Amino acid sequence: MFLRVSTNSKIPIIIICLVIIFLWTGYGMAGKKNNTHHFEPLQKKLIQDGFDSEKIKSLYKQTQVKFEAKGAIVLFTYSESKVNYDQFSNDWSIRNAKKYMKKHREELAKVEAAYGVDKNVITAILLVESSLGKTLGTRSAFNILSTLASLMYSEARSDLYTMIPKDKKTSRKRYEKSAKRKSKWAYGELKALLKYADQEGFDPAEIPGSFAGAMGLAQFMPTSILAYGKDGNNDGTIDLLTHADAMASIANYLKKHGWRPGISRKKAEKVIYHYNHSEYYVKAVLKIAKRLES
View 1 (tube, helix red, strand yellow):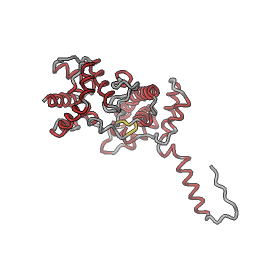
View 2 (spheres, helix red, strand yellow):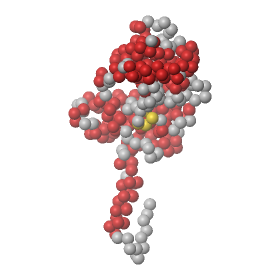
View 3 (cartoon, helix red, strand yellow):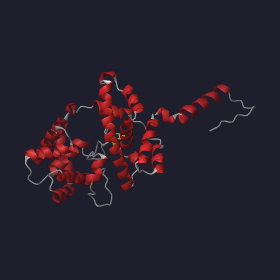
View 4 (cartoon, rainbow, N blue to C red):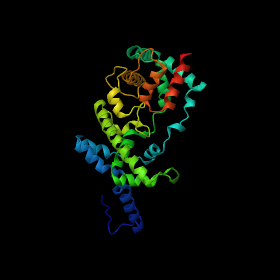
């Protein structure tokens, strides 16, 4: 981009300089400004792994694509034990869950009959995961997974480490080990997200997600959507932002992991643990489901 000024121009030189600086910092340095340059080696790897070159380059050029440092830092500092699961089993939450079950009774009955999974458990999971669809995540699943995946490269790891607040930092050695492990996992999830979005005709950059890249009412990771996602409303698309699809996908997931009608408490705990590897989570879901029975 060039700025042509005639010799007769009355525009002060200082203004011209300021405009040039703005154009340079706002456009020419945009990649550096939001750290999207960390995605350059990631793009090459995706292309090497078989993804269409033009699609990948076009996707990462979108203005909403950015290095999601804040979300990634949450994943490094998050503690499951600090989650207040009691909030989901209080009287107010249970009343809302019962209203939800009444509103979606036909869909829940259909799913329960098809998969043999207790509708109370399905509702309990939806309540904990997304407040019955009201909390879907405020970040782009694509951005967070791209950011985490880019940590396989040393420059991205170093930049992110400098952004972690001092009171939440671990040792550099421990961070490096964790970042490399998470990047490998995230890269697999990123590839799954791209496949899922292409399969269903979605723009991956537009799908909302959690700080870990989980998506939809059921908060499935992309690999879980590919493996267990179901079209609950028979519209030809697996979209976990719809209630019917989320319900059917949860039920299918639990069934594939061993849920059966009349399952014992002990076995139910093991099945739900597959959904979220947290004893706090398992106890919360079963507590909510029990309260929904009455």
